Amino acid sequence: MLVDLKDGSCRSCNGQLEITVVDDATMSVVCLECSDNYDVESDAFGDGCMKYFFPLMAQRDGIGFTGE
Image 1 (cartoon, rainbow, N blue to C red):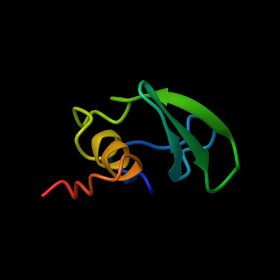
Image 2 (image 1 turned 90 degrees about the vertical axis):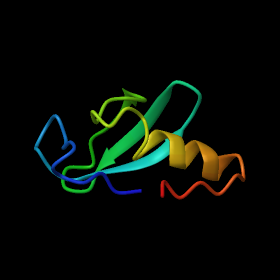
Image 3 (image 1 turned 60 degrees about the horizontal axis):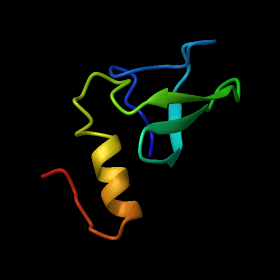
Image 4 (image 1 turned 180 degrees about the vertical axis):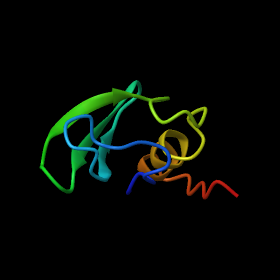
């Protein structure tokens, strides 16, 4: 899932991030520009975990939450 640039960007180059893995506490992101990768907290993008973390966890667990 791509992170909207208004929500967050790469800490190294300000490029767009893609969330590649989620677990119970963190999300792994990779920058599409510089390929930097690192883990961030579930609420790293200031969305109360609702836009990125919760939908990805639901998808991972087969619940199918769309956020709507």
